[in-house]
Figure (cartoon, rainbow, N blue to C red):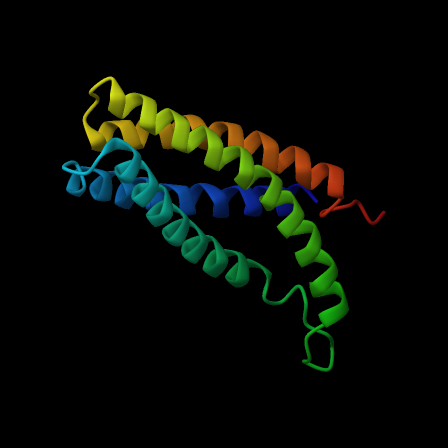
Length: 147
């Protein structure tokens, strides 16, 4: 069970690392845009990168978990776990998006460099996101102890 939490957190952090780097570059490239546009476009890029990387890593780590002895996919277990995962991530994503957008916009309005505003806002949001995801995963019992 602990190993499952560690894999999930590793996947989230690696996806955020990729996202934070590219989002900062995009924020800087869009520095001539209005603050609300820069923030919005950067947040959209953040999501595309994050979910692309996270999905790939999650699949790679869990591809054998849902295989039956016959070699087919255990779709019942997969659907059950995906519902719990989507619920856990969904709650955290709402919190993350609000905090990320508001903090980046704020930092841009007080004249932080766009790349720095993006990095700081994403860092703050990621810490809160990790807490909410882990709490949600615990509450949904995604990785319940089968013993």
